[in-house]
Amino acid sequence: MNDQQRSFTMTLGDSAVAAAAQTAIFEPKVTSRKVCVFYGDKQALFDVNLDIPDQSVMALIGPSGCGKSTYLRCLNRMNETIPGCRVTGEIKVDGRDIHDPELDVVELRGRVGMVFQKPNPFPKSIFDNIAYGPRIHGLARSKTDLEQIVMTSLEKAGLLNEVKDRIHEPGTGLSGGQQQRLCIARAIAVNPELILMDEPCSALDPIATAKIEELIDELKSNYCIIMVTHSMQQAARVSQRTAFFHLGVLVEEGATAEIFTNPKERRTQDYITGRFG
Amino acid sequence: MNEHTVKSYEEELALLDKKIAQMGGLAEQLLGKALDALERRDPKLAEEVVMADRMIDNLEREIEEQVISMVARRQPMADDLRHIMGALRITTDLERIGDLAKNIAKRSLAIADESHPKPLMSGIRHMVELALHQLKEVLDAYAERDADKALSVWRNDAQIDAMYNSLFRELLTYMMEDPRNIGISTHLLFGAKNVERVGDHTTNIAETVHFLVRGFNIADDRPKDDQTSSTLISSS
Image (cartoon, rainbow over all chains, first blue to last red; front, side, top):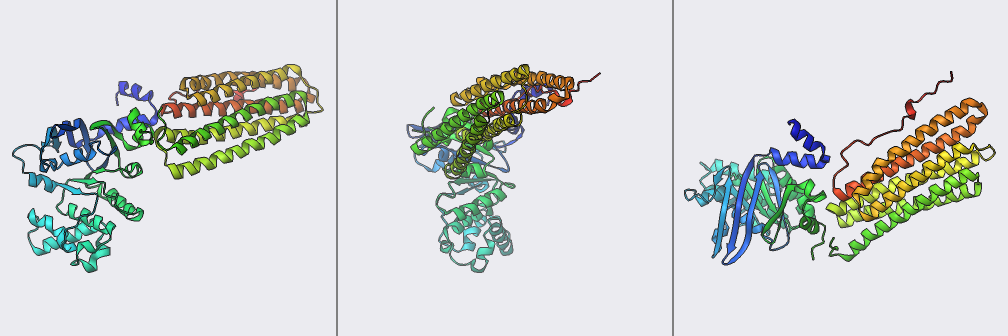
């Protein structure tokens, strides 16, 4: 730190210094510049600039219709599957533009796993649910290889002990929380770099939620996790950074501890304290 | 600022402020009465102070319980969180101020039969008046969410410290003049120290108010002017 920086930080409080330090140090895994999304004539996202660090959890919060899920779906180009939807701006993962025409979108989606609000296992066995991705992406060279991937994924998702005796039974027979962890196991089976989660716990009870949160906490040391959540407490508990969206605009982004104790923007403050009319 | 969508949350926060104001008012009264009891050597008034301190203690408990319940039930965020945690810290400081006032009042019983050195008494009176002014200002700063006012209270504490230093020297001199003065002087010295401590708690409150409003702590070191811990007066 040079003298100029030091004299600057001396005038700030400790927490502000911590936040500033955190902003400065990370090398972003994902960078977004001027990202806009249009559904037909209606613009849903306005010039979003957002950097997301690797090996951490980024929480996206905001009221319904604020654009947080829309932004999330930009990251694996899922918006393209919606008729009339148009995305402009630049999104890079590891410095590579994901809209590069030479980039294979299937390969991109292999690098970006996604977990949805409602657990959606395929109507197949637990084993086949997880083996599906590695099979279509050609990740396993042999049957033993595939079995290894399935077991490792189940273990990483904290599900192995609970299902090891019924691995060939239907995935749909599991409880809601187990199904969601199965979906997470399925997402990590293709060895993604990013995991997108769209309200992964909103259909689960508090115990199943705690298990998923514990899992997210463990996964973050290996993955870049981006999570949309309506629960402010959940964002505060699991994320390292938080971005607040409102009416399609990224209002504020920062260290989670800072956002929930001392946000800079009035709109963020109003939203997280329950003052939105 | 906009109101909370949930009205009862808004009401609970307002109730918290009301209780802090009530507690602050009681602490002010107590300190004033404690001084009167000391000056007039009035045991009845001293007794009143002791009783009133219990009301402060009860309010502290009520506020603590409300804070715990609000943290559990409302899961406060951002300025609400700072507001609620700030109230908890302020209530502890106010309770300590009540205790210190009670301690001053109790000393009036111990020195009831001693003769009073007028100039020393007026020294303590000045200290108390300043401490009361500071306390009033900081309570206003809390009620008005005025960080600048809190900052000025925080800076002014140096005056109380300076008065305490000079009173300390005076009392030592007075004791050296005549050993019979040692009893009352010691009591007055402790009384003055208590007022100096009231000033410190007021400063704590000022820091809390600043944090509550601005979201970060005051960065500078507070000028600490109490030099009595290293003061010696030679008898030669």
